[in-house]
Image 1 (cartoon, one colour):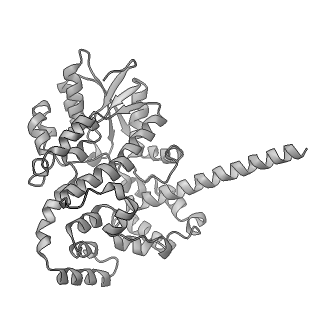
Image 2 (cartoon, rainbow, N blue to C red):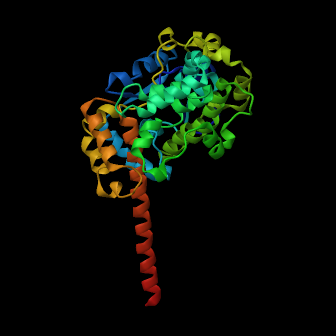
Image 3 (tube, rainbow, N blue to C red):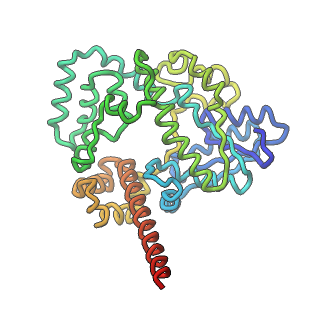
Amino acid sequence: MEADVPLGAFLSGGIDSSLVVASMSMQSSAPVRTFSIGFEESGFNELPYARMVAEKYRTQHHEIIVRPDSVDLVTKLTRHFDEPFADASAIPTYIVSDFAAQHVKVALSGDGGDEMFGGYESFFEIEKYRVLDGIPQPIRRMLSAIAERLPYAAYGKNYLRMLGCSSPLERYFELHAYMAYFLRKQMLCPQWMLAGDVAFLKSILPDAFAPSGNDVMAQAMYFEATAQLAGDMLVKVDRASMAASLEVRCPMLDQRLAELAASIPHSWKVRNGSGKTILIEALGNRLPPATLHRRKMGFGVPLARWFRTSLKDFIHDHLESRRFRERGIVRPEFVAYLLEEHMSGRRDNSDHLYTLLALELWYRQEEDRRRAWRVLADRRHQGAAR
């Protein structure tokens, strides 16, 4: 909180940002400036919960609503990330950063709480699926073979493959590290199809795995903190906020707090299908009860609806374009199938479609940049010749 410029905080209504705001308010003689983002779609709107915290601590609260036309910002964000980056929550992150930058120069966030204290549903699933560890390997191989033979559209195909995984760690990565295996197999041209097992992940992300001997929960939490947090969450917040000329600080990732969190047994964090148990038991009385035990929403955006309505033409224009089809990365007929399946409402393919969209926008940006450099180089060459 030490700053020579105006300072505030992001307040999503979730436990982590709410605890940061609570701690700030308890140490500040002036009202903390808080900034929240919401959506017209109720399933993605956490503003009522953020408002509860703001009212409890009498913050100087500011809110903004994201509407579908805001996704046009993805083209701008592509330039700032300078790499294919398919986390759609970069859109609201930029919007709330730009909004906060009108009032403050520094904002605190709750990033890191889920990784340090076991807040992700993927951790709960580890506990949920432990019962599968007793399935004999021959039966697992049979389940995988059955999954391989089912048609792509068959419900339960990916679930059977997950049941057939050879170890709890393989199962965790099958569920959370990639697009589903069968989706990738159908969508990608063979030369772009990477292996999906733990051995391959270890070969390309060696620093994202805890030392051997750790149980699957320790491995998963280590991977989330080193690969996902460092490679996605913090990149997203850093690039999106700096694009708005805002500095974001993450007190949940203070080294001393992170070291303390790492020393706490996992069973004290994740218990009975819920996470952050010890954090809530220690500090939960600082927050309104309604914010403590509700289902985690995350910082997502309602892409599924937007792609079927106001952004329908936008997604079709890019993913069915000749430029995209001729890149040789995906099978055009399967992308068309994903689009049709999504638009009809049979499945929500919005995450997969957004991933492809982010890739295509990055390609176009790179092609435009290289074209501009060639034009500039030609002009310089012509000038030197004269």
